[in-house]
Each structure stands twice: as structure tokens, then as C-alpha cells.
Image 1: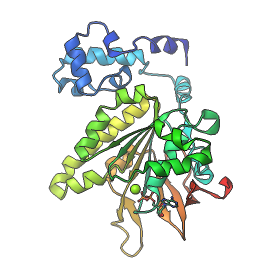
Image 2: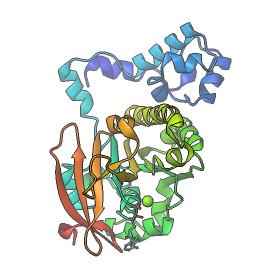
Image 3: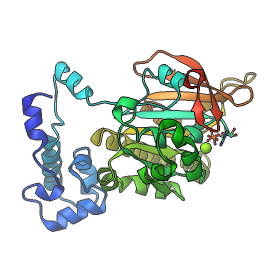
Image 4: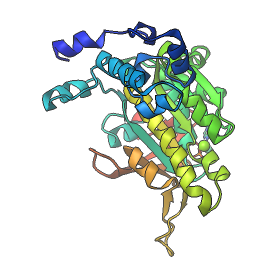
Length: 324
Ligand code: ADP
Ligand code: MG
């Protein structure tokens, strides 16, 4: 990072440090989920105004937070420097890491989609372990925030996977901050209020398993679609902004439906429409093979070539031949 950026980066530690901000405004900001400089730096004026904060104040605090974190125009060479902060998280499965050229990136959104039983939640469980590894082992030396919408998270399963990575079953659960989301609104609110939890718990991975299930079951019919997509858009933007602000990886899982343009084949596509498609950086399709085999196919990525690899689900977790 350039010297200038380094300097401004340390300007304010908490939102209370922003000069000229009264306690009432501080409280309002906290109420609507902006408890940290990091998240405030990614807020929009409209968001703050709709919570009753004056427009000028809103502009001022967002600018102060941004300056504090050097979110402004950068030259290409500086961008390369900033991107240097991006880390890769091992999936714990060598073939999948190869497909992703090292693993799951921080500051971006990775989507795993596939049919029931394709291994999406198993992978999420495994990432709860690998994120806790040190950087030399491909981890992020941090913890995970797990938002579960289908009530399929099993701590015992994470404990079963941990020893292969050298983490004690007794220790591994301490690194997981878990919340079950009961409705799409609850899911949205959980994330909107997550910034302090992320900061205080050194969260380096945010998982939403699965992102669409509530949205899909609550918003039924064409009339509700526009509204659903609007709420979804807001939710995904929040996830993206948290992941940028705190340099965390963000993983979502998604269901599939029969592809509308493939009458005679078994082709499926992820649900969630264009909104989800545009927000997910890397999209990986998981499908069942024989026995416990699974195939992971990278179907969209801003920088990686398409490709597919085999992996399998065993007692030890998700692994490939090279992991024996
Ligand atoms: P989904 O894509 O629906 O989230 P899951 O990730 O839950 O699917 O994957 C379920 C699959 O994982 C099942 O085929 C199940 O047999 C397998 N599985 C779950 N736990 C174990 C285990 N302890 N040992 C071996 N396979 C397991
Ligand atoms: Mg699942």
C-alpha cells in the first residue's frame, strides 16, 4: 500500500471518532447496522437518509469513513496493491482448489449450486474448519459466520472433519458463530446487523446456506417477483459490502431448477435470476456422480477458465485422490 493510503487508513477506529457526530446520530447509525467504520464506508446516502439522518450529515459521515479506509479513486498500479490484500481460502479438497486456482477468494462472492444432496452443505461444513487454519496451510486464520436457512448445520459433522486438518474436535466449534434464519426478512436483518460481530470475532468467512430457500418459498407468483428481486438485491449487496469491508470470503449455496431452455436434457440452472447471477463472482455447479463421487464445474468466473473436477464425500469430509 502507498504511504498516503497507509496514513489515512488508520484515521478513525470507531464511528464515535468521526468529528461532529452527535450521540443521537451514532445511535441511529448503530440501529440500522452501521456499527463500524468498515461498514459505514460502504453505506449509501439514501440508506442513512431513510433512517432519518439528514442528507448533509449522511454525506459527511460516509465521506469521513471512506477517507478513513482510502476508498476513493486509485491508479491501476495501486489497485494491484489493494488486490494484494485478497486472500485465498483452501476448500480442503485438492481438486477443487486446483479448479479455483488456490481456493475461495476474499472480497468476493462464491456460489455453489446444485440439487439436493449434491454436497453444498457438506462443503460449507468443511470451510468452517479450513478457515481456521493458518495462512501457511491455506486458511485465513479466522472464524466463520454461518447463516443457516434450512436448519441442516450439524456441529458434530464439523467435528468429524476437523482432525484431518489438524484441528481438535473440541476446539473447532469455538470458531463458528452460528445463526439460524427463520424467514427471508430475518436472514436479511441478521446480515444487516453483522458488522460488529464480524469485527469482534475475527470473522474471515461468511456462509449463507442456502441463500434462496426462504425467498423462494415466501414470494410466490409473478406479482411478487419484482419485490423479491429487490429484497434479494439488497441482501446480496450487503453481503458483498461486508466481504469487501472486512476482507472476508463470502460463500452462498443455491438451489437449482430445470433449465427453461432445455426440454429434453437434464440441464438445470441456479435459481435467483439475473440479480444473483450478476452478484456471484465464481459460480460452481455441483452434481452427483456414482456412489459418493461428486463433480464440481466452474460455470462462471471473472478470471478463471471453465472446467470441472471430481471429488468425493467421505467420513473425512470432501476430498479428492490427491488428499489421501
Ligand atoms: P446439499 O447439496 O443438499 O446441501 P449435502 O451437502 O447435505 O447436500 O450432502 C449430502 C450428502 O453428504 C449425502 O449424500 C450424504 O450421504 C453425504 N454425507 C453427509 N454426512 C456424511 C458422512 N458423515 N460421511 C459420508 N457422507 C456423508
Ligand atoms: Mg444443504
